[in-house]
Image (cartoon, rainbow over all chains, first blue to last red; front, side, top):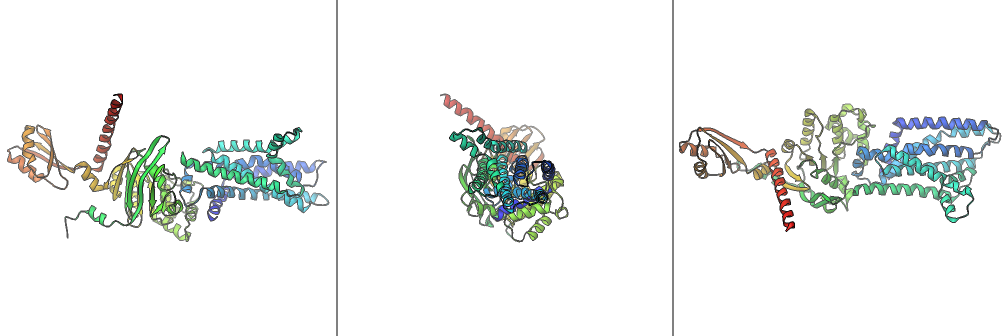
Length: 240
Length: 340
């Protein structure tokens, strides 16, 4: 475990000293803030977490692949992976540490969104319910975890950050919009099954204050499944 | 004082426990073996040089020893720990510098060394980092970003990270490649200082470097070790030792010359014609006086007598060249046999 923390700490330090992270943070707050302002000024605005969740989810679809694309691709390109993988550290600890570092950086970014929640609760007379707020942030954290794990996976298959980034965005978008299949009204089992794999429905469930174990398991499975696959892919690079 | 005592024998007597034991190590890339059935042993405190042309399999062997690549067959032990079954224990004992000196340009020297020390499980990291930074004389750049350092300084950081956990075995892949002459000298001095405390395995394709630094040299070619000995032993054994050039004031028939010199003790071969001959003598038998006496005794005017020791470079080129020729011939013979 201490090896995971060591790798994660370095990764977190790299994020906070990299230009890319601050550009992402700025863009996130700019777009998020703009859309938030537009929303609360509209006549249909409601003081619930739902619109906020959908807003952050959409932005995260593009932010997480950008954050994760460097993680393993750059190490493979520059050869630093060779030093990591010849240190007394297991392969899974490298992958896990990388993911954890990015996750911590992204969570610190998400903490900034509390400002939106604060503004919204002050604007409505009754304020915001604590329940939906907590469940929403759990959903947000789980989404961040899963999206970053997908990014780690795409970053493991290539030495090119650009390829990893594009692959990541494509994969994330496809997964996100699989839920749309629910709206075409088909009752066929395979349609239902494929739609169930989609990210957005599971994620939005967290907005109404209920924590469904199925949704939690869905995100945890996706996260650790991707990290497991990324580890195996790194291992196969040794056999080539 | 025993003058007959050879230095190579002395160093052999002082050999410690085996640090690297390689047994029939083989690694295939697709159908092609990069390393084929390689076995060798390196002892505690030795500096062992891997010498060979580019693409001979030096890096592949090092990557297998450090646990980066698994062997296709065969095995190796680092201080008794199997590199496949007991990889983590073996890795803890190794400090490794890969060929391209991969570092994180966005980190400072000190942060990077702290990170590597932590990964290798060093307890007192502050002291360890201070120690290696002064060892490679980089303490004054401790807070600089690695990306801002010159190649020579980066190489020092690379060596520092290989030393930070005070490993028993240090593996350096082409440690002086791409450096300028002054930096090369500095790095070589650094490596020489490691002698005794650590076992060092280094690869190089620069012959004087191996000659200068290493106690023992393994010449590797096309994935196989073609020669292994001490630097002196290798030169003597493979080069046939010393050669004496004999220049005469007038032409003398080769047969007469050969007849005269064959009687001289230690002479193994006489080549040449007319007024210029090359006499090969057994190693460490300086036969110049005897040769001169034989020539002058026959009434031939002796104008030149020159002893030349073969350098490792001669040996190396001879080995590689003759091998290539033999291999080419063998390949031809095989195809002919197959045609029949």
